Image 1 (cartoon, rainbow, N blue to C red):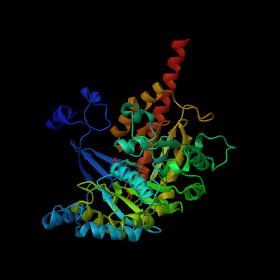
Image 2: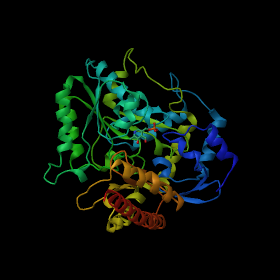
Image 3: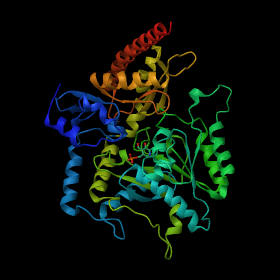
Length: 461
Ligand SMILES: Cc1ncc(COP(=O)(O)O)c(C=O)c1O
């Protein structure tokens, strides 16, 4: 066990996000001190495969000196200027570069510092857009159950996770939740486009003249990488157009090569009215986010005295934009999107090979973004109850995977899953490592859960 000043100080002073800090009364805080490629290192020098790209962020991998140099040069030239009434070269250049990469007419970029700010801004922009066009009653936004869209009050209202929402009720009014695309738990005879049609039902029920936007991730993160059914987004696009509702593609995770394209919407062949993004936009070497709006969404704000009365001091920080530009350079030079497309099948095959384990119920996802759903009974798809899931995920899996050198996500905000999103530079070597560690740990999990059941049975008897 490493006992350092950092440990003591972390336990005494650092408020960790979404963290049961009580756990660290008798455990070490995992302190990551260095990153290199697909790997990070703790304070004892132990190496971990970063199978989650530091929370779906470090798409190009850790340790690119080039980005450090770009950031330093930008600080020396112009450390900071805002995008409130002024502009600066890097925000202009990055907005232009992004517009060149986006599909359709998504040509106008409003920068933020992260994903929640982007989602919050997109909802406000949708309301402001409709108001500017003479439809001020359009204020509601539809999102999917279990979907995570951020934590600020507006973004949290959009987030479809009850446990995250209820402690902060009442939330911003106007968010409506619709079914997600988790077909693993659908009956086989269900119409595959049922979840898309549920969006139309919700719009009609709410009253289309009150609905501003629908916000969806290309692949839904929370719940475990729910992919859309074939034709889902085309149907949703039609529904939005029919009812004058804007379609927002929340690509805080799914852009910047994560699914093998610059933007996740390209993979599924739809063009939204807005894209919200963050994380991989700068590979998180600096905090950065954006709302990318279509020309028709920006249009009402380009005349006379109208403006979008919204902003953040640090939105489009020059250093973050300089890093964002260099990140795109690296992604292009190293052909990261092509790489993900070429390697996706091999990555998927390693995860699929784990299906022989009784605990592996489903494997799903796209690109370098996959989840394994863990089940109690494979045949019936029976899931673990809350107590079992608590033991399985927090009592065993997360600690054991970390111990064996793999950082990934164990999550039971929906049914229990293990989730992987390695840096886009990951290849065969990392896929093998992921498979081998998962196989060992999940096999042991099967045994432990069987023992727990046997024990519970014995106690009952
Ligand atoms: C789809 C989506 N939207 C919004 C957010 C919020 O982003 P941030 O944590 O940068 O505020 C996240 C974060 O993971 C996300 O995955």
